[in-house]
Length: 436
Image (cartoon, rainbow, N blue to C red; front, side, top):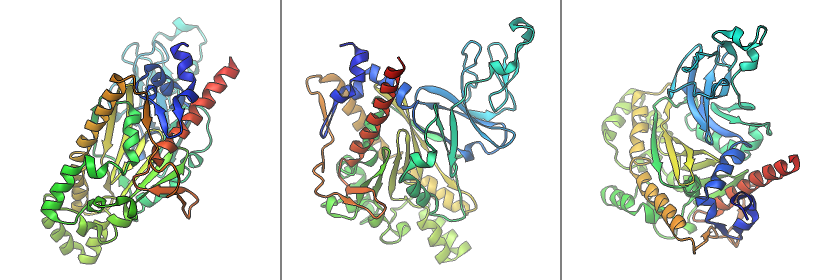
């Protein structure tokens, strides 16, 4: 069987509670994911606050496809292929900027922020009456924004809110923690390049099983210095706690720590941060203790990991975006968020909190992702990856919103997203076979 045929025989790569190592190491499967998976569903590309003014743009990727996310003169959002329709040159070569005209550095073809071709030098050489519209940039088939989060799809798909399913309500709750203070994503990003398949990273996105072990040193330091703070509730039988993981539909999942993290004042339970006492004192003096504490409680870690398949993760106050590079390389982009209309002290505190994750905790996780990749690549005799924890369903319950939840250490998350992976890959492969 050829590599191409094997990659399409996806059923052979799954068993109950097991997935095959090829899904993490096979470059052919990776290329098909970039083409089929990322090309047939909604993919997060940017936040509206990153492009607030007409002409603003950022460059991102949909799978491996380079794209430009723009705001045009009408305030509309556009997702354009970052490829000149002439010879294929990359058009925008900066991460972000503002431009009324996008000009190709190679032959100076020019385009507006909607992707329309506005100028071709020495145009008569292409024909006396050639229509410039023939030279427009490539565009995503659909672009929608959900409360500032911009998604794009490369082919027609159901509406974004339908795709988000149960994730929409959780995203609403995250955004509404500070009513009247919209989030802003204007503080740059912290990228981590890891020698790991992107799905090894995604596996961890709602893994409550690893916390006590992988982050032992961090938790021990916090406990020794500050007592019962932050994630101390993972000590003991964490599956007996109120923590849980939930399947939100369409591959999206939630790891929810709020019942423990926010049982008391989230701010008062937060461990010491540089400048904590001074900032708290300044806020109390400016706003009064009650209003200050309300803002502080709403600006500590959110207590959730919300995962919107395939590439968007909301962790604490940060936005994490996965950028697959190859079968064994992924860039993890962490974007800080600030709030509009709050005292500077609040946003300073939000930024300080990133010194836990990603600055401190993500290095633990990255080491594990890379160690997993080594084992998967170098030991071909061991073919299977185990995702069977709590697969018997004995601890499964249907929540009031109709979605299933299981204990915090369950492998419900990988089982849920792999089901979505299979649905997208299998349906697209079947469509191509019928077309052929």
